[in-house]
Every structure is written in C-alpha cells, then in structure tokens.
Image (tube, rainbow, N blue to C red; front, side, top):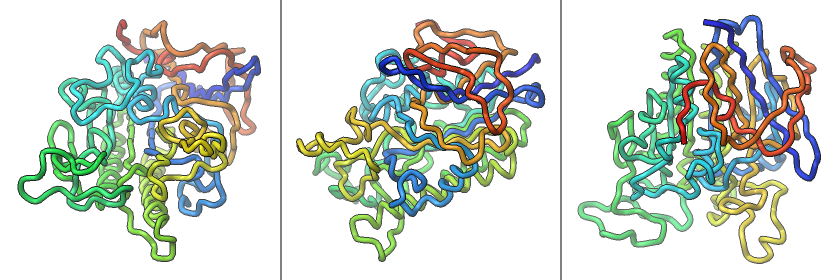
Length: 425
C-alpha cells in the first residue's frame, strides 16, 4: 500500500510581519500500514468562556476539562465564519466562503446547499478507504444531492439544519419562547418572528425521516447512541473511520433539565452545558475503549454565542467587545468581533498529542487536519486558502514536542493538503 504520512498541523499565522510557530504532529514507524481515525465534534453557538479550563466561572464541563488535561488546548483558535453554514462549509472544504460559495446560512426553504463542485473531507477520506459518518446538524443543504449521504458520508443521523428551524411538541427554552407544534391544522405563517409552526422538525437516518417532530429531550442521548454504534461498527470492520458530529448544543432551544439552585435565567444554559459535556464524554469513552491508540479526537465550535438570546447565550469570557456593546451591538455570533469567531478547541490522541499542553498560537480551523496520504495519488486545488513552508523533515512528536515548522502569510487550508481525487472548479 505504501507508507502513510500523517500530519495534524495547527498553524500559526502571520499578522503585521510576525511569525508564529506551528504545532506539528508527525508519525512514522508503527503508523506505516495503519490509517488513523478521526472524530470531529463541533459544538453550536458555544462561547469561548463556556469551557471551564478557559474561564474559571464555568463549572459545568468536567469531562471536557479532563480531555484538555489529557491533550492539548488551543486558546487563540478561530472559526472561519461567525455563522453556522459558512463555518461548516469551510471546515469541510478547507476554503473560505468567498471561494466555496457559502456566505450565508441556508434556510428551510433553500433548494441548494454547499456547491456540488466543492470537495468535502468526507469525500476525500471515502476515496482513501475510510468509513465515514455524520451525526447531528448538517446545515449545508438538505435536498437531493446536497444531502450528507451524497457529500461523502456513508451514514447520516441528524437534523438537516438548526433545531430551531421547525416546531416540536416540547419546544424547550428559547428567547423569545416559541410555541409547540399546533394540534390539527396550524397557521400558514409563524405567529412570531423566528418561530416555525407550519413545519415539524425532522430527524433523518440516512435518507429517511425517522421522527417528526423531533423529541428534543432525548436527542442528545440518541446522538450518543448512534455515535458509539458507528465507532463500534467501524472499528469491527477493520477500516479506518471519520466521524463528524454537529452537536445541537449550545444552540437554542435548550432542552436540558435545569437545577433549581441556579438563577432562573442561567439554569437552562448550565443544564445544557452539562448535557453536552456528558455527550462528549460518552464518545471519548467509546474511543478509549475501541480505538484509543489510533484516533484523533477534536473538539471545537462553529462560532461564538448568540448574544441576542440573553440569559440563554453562552459566555464570551474576556472578549466582551466593550466599544461594540456600548453602541448597543453584540460582540459575538454574526459579527466579526473576536467573540463571534474565537471558539474553544481541544485535541486528544494518547501517545501522539502532548498531554496537558496549552497553545497560544493563532489558528483557524481550516488548518485543523492536514493529511498527506502518500499511498494515494495527490490532487490538490490551486485556489486553497493559504500556503505552508516546511523547514525540514519532521521528527516524530514526543514530549517535549518540537516546533520546527514556521508559517507565514495567509492561513493554511486543509483542503490544499488532502491527497485524493479533487474536482476542478
């Protein structure tokens, strides 16, 4: 098959002529004939300060904090956009919205999605022999060829867009609150802005709707069960796998069970954080039991918190955007202020990723995974977002890890460095 050279390259960026070191994880020897697995968990509307190890006021992410202690934490990590669809499109293609064509969120009524001439990470890894699964929020088109099953994912279980884009029988916590699905024939138009009463929220398994409306109170557990089942089946098959999870947390409506000890406004949000933390912990436990030595687990967010949701929004930590808030605006989601795109980020891979290390390198998540699969014919796109200079042949990573690569210029896109069949654009 030839040898496998894996790089997970978290890239430093040059602004105003400053050079930042890149963090480089390189593996040879025992990984020669074994392709690594990837588990990517993407939280929704999670604030930088919602992670306990980032912000001392947060006390509800014990499992994520433990993962940070067992791996690496990135404190200056940025999403590619401050809204859902553009951020997810960049994550999967390694190209900014101005290149991949996704600059706004897709609506329930959208007939299109991520342009079909864009290549996703799932498609590249499928062609490399991987089993690929997507669980959770997709939000890159839900009709025809835009469905995840046709965009590089063998298995799909989830909601095709945000879970506030349809009514449910138990609406959960939102601001302002939205009504439950109407009994019998409902109104033809939503009674309030941003509330949907004429469309029940669907839950898909592959191409079939398996629940409508979705029961939000059991959704997290369903996601955990499907994720662990996928990991088990993929591991049993002997094939490498990619699992991409788009969590419903911490987007409204929130469905966790609040603790009465909390102030009323924060009870639901803290309960949601605990539920998300438990969900991620279950997935990590499954990885540890089945594929610990050969799996990179990555956790991050799609954008910052939705400040307009008031007490149901997450914490921006110290990135309060004082000037902006004094003008009556928001410094978070849907803005280019720092809290809109600066997100939590953790990497975990025992024996490969350094333990209990914090990186302050300025990073963005197209740079998240760089694969050079030397046993496959390369096909790289010339219009990817960035360039990298490698100083020398890297040595295997081990504590203390080596920062031997220097990066400058624009941010590196993972799509540029993925070997596999690409498409002309």
